[in-house]
Image (cartoon, rainbow over all chains, first blue to last red; front, side, top):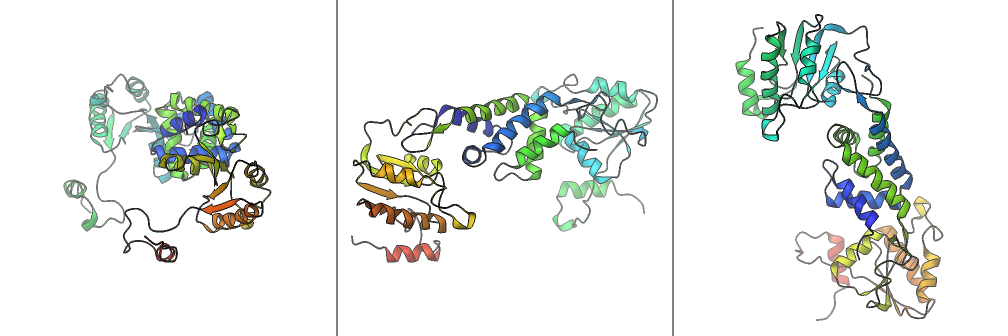
Length: 198
Length: 198
């Protein structure tokens, strides 16, 4: 039996979701059509809604429905600290720590020459303008500790230092609760190199 | 930072998919909005399309976009054999075996008194009418070997036998390539009880 075209198309569309293979996509499609048609309609509405309403904060570049996001419009934040992250998810993770009270800038990507993503493909120019507003004193680079994230941090550090800004990088080292026996050698080596006096 | 409402709604809608928890839903939502807006639009279209076009085959009750599905409209199938399954997925699994050339009937559910699903909530009446068309000689019960599936099979067997039809159940036993050492005790016990002379 051939699958009806609209069902086949639904399975194919679900398969493009991250972490969803052909089997899961089929299970989801049947679940939605057999047992949860309301859920399917809700999901379609939510997708179209998000596509229509979500734009980027004019100051920090994260997702927002309004011109200025909650963080940027909060008067109580420290306006002299600017934390640079790759993605809105990273911003949310940092906010959950409650350890940072400055402002953010979301690059919406990272430098990745192998994938053809150069300085013009991320919001680099906007970051430089944002950081040179005369209020920002320190830029904290919180890109990922992947090859691309590190390269992005190095590149940004050079550009930002050339503009007379203080630039810092979030620390590498042992995770909280981590045991030396179970941590990878690279992390342990960094923790040793970047040891601090107590 | 509070998530924008439309993004929050999208995450909530994705979370209703089977097997998707809060973390995965968030990852999917960000992926769709950050990197794959076309994928998001395609998925919304596919959902609405499927909701609009998919209906049930008038003969076997499976999903189809037309009145009669591919299997039911195939002249070459054996019209005297009717295989009863719970769900369209089950039908597709059986079709992939290429071992059955009769027709199907999809219950779209199973008897499950605990969940309040009685004989009137599955397509039982339609099955009885379908099986009594004078052409069907044998009804093969291929509901799952779960408690509910077994109960459904017992119930159906009684109803169908009362109408003078030959009723059979697909076999239980060792899986192909299965080793006695690794099979569960229940399956092995059934394989012993239902042994056949060779």
